[in-house]
Image (cartoon, rainbow, N blue to C red; front, side, top):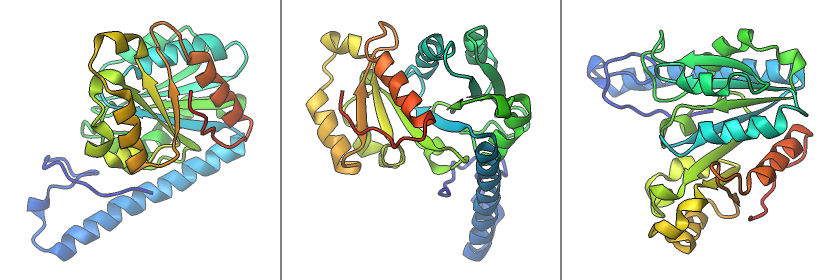
Length: 252
């Protein structure tokens, strides 16, 4: 369900300060408690999603890759024909949630800085806290916009059906090699901001080779949230997923 990691911060959950624990045994016990709690919560979330008949997609990326802009365009296309809920994760502010308001989706905001220690990801208990604010039984699809981070979100399952990464061409073709956990954890990689390719030195073939080195055969779609190129194909993938079909591996 997840992997343990530490950032050397002083909050206790879910990344304990190792200086508080004097032995390796104590650290292992803390790790087991953290992962056990997340696994139990993820199973409970999964049961709730299954009972409601809703498909859940966990959308992850580094900061600034364009998740929120993509969600805006996604809701504009899908909300008229699909009942959608969004769990919006951010450390502080409601800025991203506000951008999604009025587009036909039910929105539930989770600020990880509000009682969760300012975490760099959403975990299963945080998702559980968001569910009472969504009409699950009336939804077809729930989209989770995770906190922008290239490591932490991939390490905590939340009960989702699919994991999708939004990768921006401004980030560099080496990122799959530097952050393999994220790229290995997903069912689909959306290569965003392709409208900027003429102005960058981004090496797309090298990116594809690097991605294949860490996650052979993962689905890839090219798109631009700003121009709308490729967004319809992404929406088609979401519709297929919400109809219970397997994830597409088509390269587009």
